[in-house]
Length: 190
Image (cartoon, rainbow, N blue to C red; front, side, top):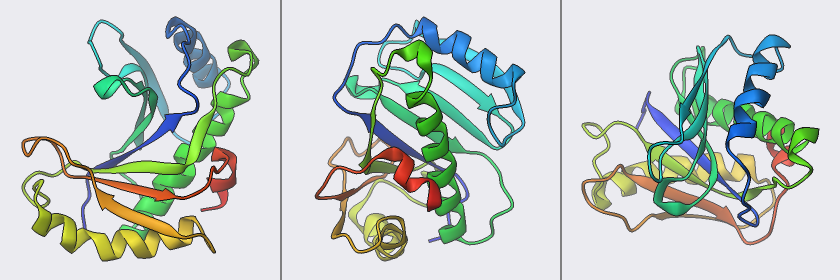
């Protein structure tokens, strides 16, 4: 199943309480100093949306958000475009760029080392309800490819890929995880 539109989300460990307003200054600073290998466009503030995307850094290729959907704080990245042609290249590219983003965020002194992302688990969210409806059949069609890619992301580790039990009207979501903690920076080589 070759999907063009999808997202991933890595979660905070442990979940911490950080003032989201700090991310606005950090992301504007990243734009000014070209900290990412993207065409960075803008910062969007969605703090007013309950359990929403929080603060977003909008780039030409990917939208990054410090997301609080369903009360779970994490780094959400939605792929918009890229040069990759295969599903494998698309997902590996998004994991790598999100890991780089996460590692940069973790190391930002303005957060006083409070923010840590868990690299050993992430959600893959199909952002295409027509080609990937939230059904067991669609998940089973997607699962073998996700397993093969997950084994590249986590070489030598036991990987599980399961379907998130969520509302049928929600987007199809796969939970990809290993049974040990992984530093987000370790995924920058994906």
